[in-house]
Length: 109
Image (tube, rainbow, N blue to C red; front, side, top):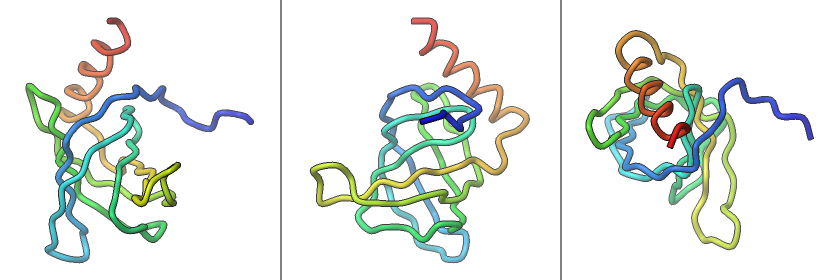
């Protein structure tokens, strides 16, 4: 299968605060991977494709806040939980620099 991703993903797990842009509800989860273009998160329920989120990703030294959109969602392998592929819609300026610097350290280690 041909890889469609523009950015390589690092298999890292970080705490993420998520809020649905259409609601005031906030929930906390973790990533299973991370790239400059998106992340995969663990969820208790499946998300509808296209759902818009605001994410706060804790990168140990800094936290980045990003607008994002659910690209896909499904049941995790051998799990009662779900996973969702998230694409960052707005990863620019300082947030992009922080995330890019963080990922470079991971890929170079």
